Length: 383
Image (cartoon, rainbow, N blue to C red; front, top):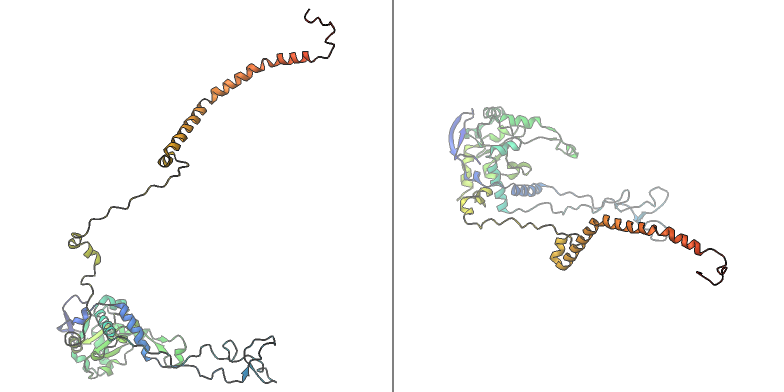
């Protein structure tokens, strides 16, 4: 939106000739979603019906051979003596057959659009045309334009020559946008180049007037320049492609007529859902913060669950007796590890003491195992 209640009016020579008030519709909320929706549906309303011929691909006598002949059941051309006989026909998979789902002229070509949505989209486009950033973002060359929106004296409506129109645009710095559109002219990509729409070019300024006293004849031949009466504002011109921010050049009478077309006496002007869209500022304001509940504490951090099979502390929470038994077992194991050297030394000393009697045992065994007459001396044993 323009940040001032007054808009400058420029003469045909580019000098400031006066001021006028900014129409209220220029402060309407900008809704690119509504503009895009309405533009998409409006652009469908100038289409012409098209369809393929109802008899295309069907102008041949053909019938299926049926089953039992090891061929597909597609209809086949009858007769003989030519390569065409026996070929498949009618089906969309056949050479020379019809297309799949042949197009019909009774397709739903046009779209109905709610009047309130249409008006909302036009109001949004008008408001966006008063924002220099959006106009520049759309690609218009307005670096030398003294003010946006650009309002000209009513004498612009009396211009009748294209040379005079070029001088007017050059005086207010708008000729650069026309030259940009002229330099963008190129041959269309696609079959449209053979259908009487060979060239395409970018959009230039939109001249909006109140009464046509020759302004149509003066500006209509400039490349990219379009004209529109303020009583017949068209969204397809205000937001080409569904993109808001068209560079508009107004006559003062057309600019002032917006107050009659929109407002209490005319069409209603959309209102913002929020007077202040800065949500962060609203939430952090003293008025809101004073009535809010205190901030909640951070969520409780839960400790990692421990395995009671490996952690005695976790086991003590589940079964204190089992934890005590495991602790005593661990203490006994630690005690055994500490007494391991003494136990081994005791065992080795015992084995060593046993080995010193082993030789005597072996000698005794050998002696008693000798073969001989045990009664050589008779029965006087020990005499």
